[in-house]
View 1 (cartoon, one colour):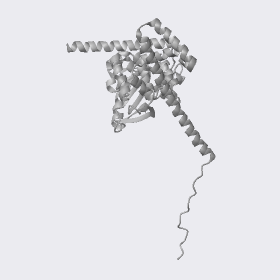
View 2: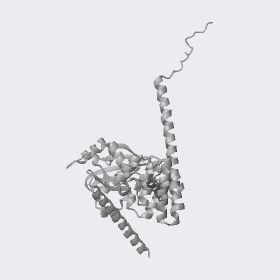
View 3: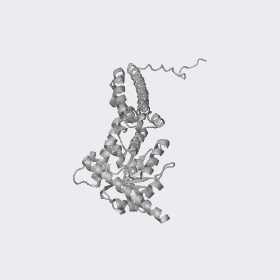
View 4: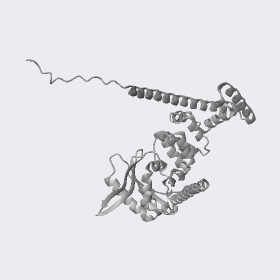
Length: 363
């Protein structure tokens, strides 16, 4: 009996790539290879500049004769730049020496240069405070900032606006070491005060709804101000308790902290009653929204002002609540610097008083 050909599967002709598809693939290969070569060259140059700086510092300036050292560095600069170009002039050799001075651990430099290039390090070595310098170096490494982003973070005084900067130096060092050795990011490294929201374009009088709508309209820039790792989840999330409805202003998720982060907006100054309301929301989120493997939810109360002593007395950190001001207009830089430095000074002074009181009680 003759078999019907109806049941046979037709062979599918192989798809022939178009010229446009081949072009796209080849361009991708070229660009990827170029980027890899650029990263390798950048890492090698960073290692070279560190080694040059170390050699000059230890073998020439280590003799302790400042005048002699200056003459030698100037002479080296003239000879090297004549042979290898302006990148090895005296001023650049001195920058390499500063690089080796401010980052003396070769192992740490070797680890960081996988993500940080020479232009990153040039911005970092200009910072005199070692804690501030290490904060920006580690955050730059973990969040993979570009050199432009790093410069913007430094100019925007990110370090001074973190909760971390208000702690004693010893605790700051412990957290930075944990970030470097274990990639352990904590809320104190993430949360800020104040948050600068000048990009929202809010002027004169506005309502909480206006503030919320402006944030959603500029959500990308708001996420940049919050910091890397935040993802938007919901606005005006409804929760029901005992027949009453409550609405959470903004809900986010932090991918690294693995926590939900609630943001409550307040037009006026912070009031103690605000924390009770937010603590209720956190308990509900912990019970109904927290997924297996996640840490307990946190909250940020964003308000137009706050009294620091009141906030500290409430000890809201134990409840996972961070109170921060927001600025809809960026003040003059001098005023912002003064305000942030004063906030750091007062916070550290109060921490020192608390520590002294606890030590006296133990005695």
